[in-house]
Length: 279
Image 1: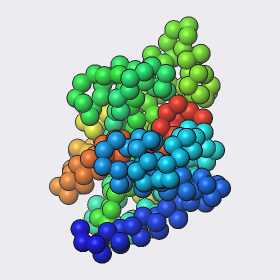
Image 2: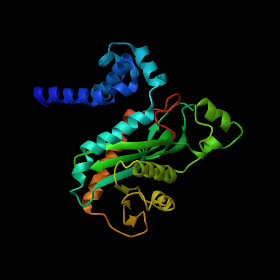
Image 3: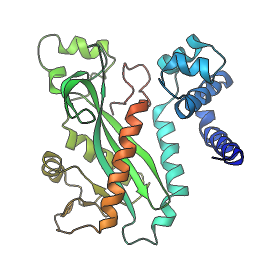
Image 4: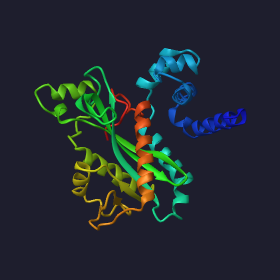
């Protein structure tokens, strides 16, 4: 990149943050949000709180930790703004494409050492290709010819978090809502797609992982959620269709984006020991 490219990218980052800044409340919280965003983009190695505060912030490690852990910003408002940004900037160009907007649904795991984080368990970690102690999130990525964005995501809570005498206390300690019932990954994926369709964010075709995802999602009755074609060779409304090759390339690209998003962590639900919201 040339010096001019770097300056242009820096200006775009400031512009991007400005769109979301007021959602974080006071000026100090807005500054912390910008520091964290800049750290995710710029820090060369570990993208955790302390390196970010020291590398691109003002050195206030405890202040940035409090912002990430307990700041009372509303996740739903931030996600809605991200969806609006995608709709404004990327979705219009997709109208000229025979594919339109592709919504790629996939899971991604993030390894954990302890046992207290919400949803942590020994389960399959797709990024490692094996079973590991990890959290797993379900992601809905919007893909258009002009760009890619995270439209929504949810934390998967394994069934082990609902079994045994101590399960209720464990969920309470992790600040998991009392009324949150167990849901399979296809059920979570269906909820994400329905929510985006209900809000009128975009009419999207949903590209899904093969196997159990395909079988599970068919039972969720998504035939009225936009255009809804699933990959490969299955339409949510029951009609069979093979998406064009470009859809496969877009799906692969978005799956890579989902993996990279998971590497950085995702916005947490206020008060929860997790970086992925529950509902």
